[in-house]
Length: 255
Image 1 (cartoon, rainbow, N blue to C red):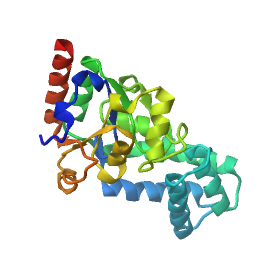
Image 2 (cartoon, rainbow, N blue to C red):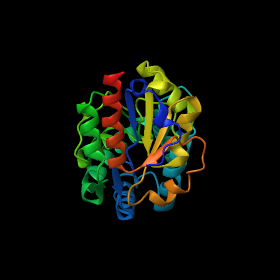
Image 3 (cartoon, rainbow, N blue to C red):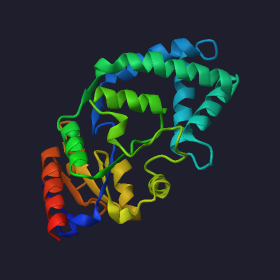
């Protein structure tokens, strides 16, 4: 594992691990995205045609990703979809709930756990690390919980789980990380951000959070393109990360 700076860090300083979800813990197939769109449209067809639904959905997501208001990401999405569909937020919210509980929930077979992720999370909990699921909070909590379930994880595995209902900033905004740490009363130097997407996960470094990019079968190429990025503190596989955790706890006990 190539480490830039992390190897010399006193092990006891990092006691909180922030895990990304998509691509880091679980992978999704393109077929699932297509099926989700087709099934979701059926719920909204009284307010959109297929083309307007597609563009309205992704425009609303774009608004969420660039949210700079104090409204939750979820409420902002609902408001934008209601405007595009010329209906009420209450109707859109009800349809969106059905979309998540029925259409999204039916796609579990198209999500695959990233090898080694669950084992690393189990080990981290056994070693006493605090864990935060710092997924990009674009979608509702239930979609996050479903993906966790498909990855073999439980809500109790984490101190906190980000979702669109609970956050009003998204990656790659540094404010996402600032507000998350403030909410949990954490200091940046206590934390390690573990992800697979340089664009979304490396900005954590800008506020003093150390960063680790996981090399998985699907992410290795993009991770290795980022080795010269000064915001990258470490990269490697899940076994590399697990070895670092074991050594870190041992060093902390000896110090």
